[in-house]
Structure formats: C-alpha cells, structure tokens
Image 1 (cartoon, rainbow, N blue to C red):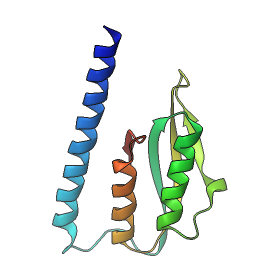
Image 2 (cartoon, rainbow, N blue to C red; image 1 turned 90 degrees about the vertical axis):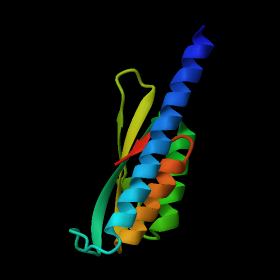
Image 3 (tube, one colour; image 1 turned 135 degrees about the vertical axis):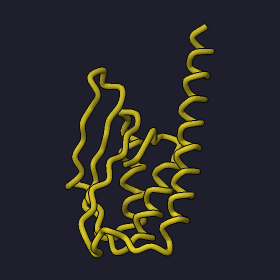
Image 4 (cartoon, one colour; image 1 turned 120 degrees about the horizontal axis):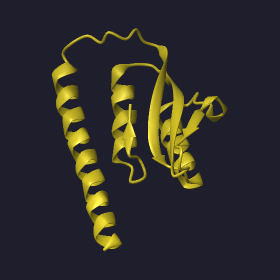
Length: 118
C-alpha cells in the first residue's frame, strides 16, 4: 500500500513540475516583447527546494555555475525542513539579463531532484 502512496505522490510532484514548466514557458513567451522590471546586471536571489541529499546540493551548484561563471557556492544559504527530509537553498546569481534568468529557472525546474524553484 505504501508503494501506491509513493507512486501517487511522485506522480503528483511530476505533474506539478510539468505544469510549472508549461506555465513558465507561457509566461516567458508573453514577456519576451515586454521590458523587465529588473535592472540588469544585478545580484538575484533564487530559491530551490529538494531532498536533503548531498547530490541535490551538487546538482544545484553545477547548474548555477553553468549559467553564472561568477557563482560563489559559499554564499548559498540553506534551510532544512523540520523533518530533515527537505532543504531549500537560496543562491545569489549574478544576473546579466532576463534570458539568463529564464534559462537557469528552466534548468532548475527540469532537474529530477528539484521540487520547485522561485
């Protein structure tokens, strides 16, 4: 019975990630012709949540470094859930432009360990 719960829970997370990705793509298309309210370049905080596993931290840092050559992993802060099962990481990204931010969010949300990114 617990495997059904897990499968249903995993399916729910997968559906939420797919819906979020679809909404992100729709929002990106709407805003491509509009100007951003963010002044670039800037330091931009990004929050990513996933399981409290070392490989989650490694994957997030790797994605961040791919999009931001100045990314400093030592500036990342974390909050662990009460149960210790999940962690949220707040990263400071050196954002050069909106397409860079869009790309990093897209890569975070499509990673299998990421539950959500803000």
